[in-house]
Length: 339
Image (cartoon, rainbow, N blue to C red; front, side):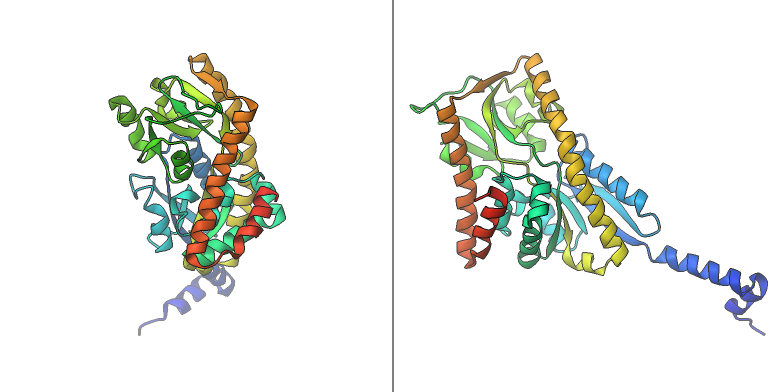
């Protein structure tokens, strides 16, 4: 006579013990499994933040949710990652929003923001940004990580200036990136778009003379071997975010969604505060290594920053106009730019 496995276990363990085993087994099978990639190499501070945040989620979410990081740009090209998460190739991506700005123009509000990630969270800007991502690209925008870090242009030789005292990049071969392309065009630079992983070789071979990068991390990339001049003031904000395939997000348990959201919101503030310390430390070390920080006059700086902000906001408005829907423009300008 063939015995039923369930009956056998109940007789051997007792009904109470069987239910404990059953519940334990059910819990194990209920763990939400998530795949993720990151845009930058693992040695950069921004990726270290993301990986530490993932570890935090995994530790606090044991038995509930588990994130497996498949790698960085070596796994999926950095510029292809936003489409990969949109299409569900992976569930989660840590990436600059500007990499998919043509599809979600609203991201430029973060680029030219005058508010911190925490202020955008409190005033409703983060919720509106998430809504735009869901509506336009089938992804959820979970958080703005490592905010409060801005950009500089770094050059291998002294800068030239126009009659108003603003840097003139005519003839300068400048490594480009989607976040600042429109601004660099306004500065008359000759631009070459390439991933961050290719810039060292491009500087070494003279393919580019200059590059823009954040206030931190230049030494991690070893670009300071070639770049000896930095122009002030700083401009724009890093727009690094954590985005999630919307269908995958909706398939998670309520507990998983809450835990992930809560942790990422905590890391918005934690990473912001940590990066402020890094900014001061990197500036001191770069100058110690011989980099010259060049500052424009107050009047030239104001014009320079106005050119940068106008380039971002005008790009956003132009893209929204092409899409036939500019309803978010004024709202985001008020929430992110205090206008």
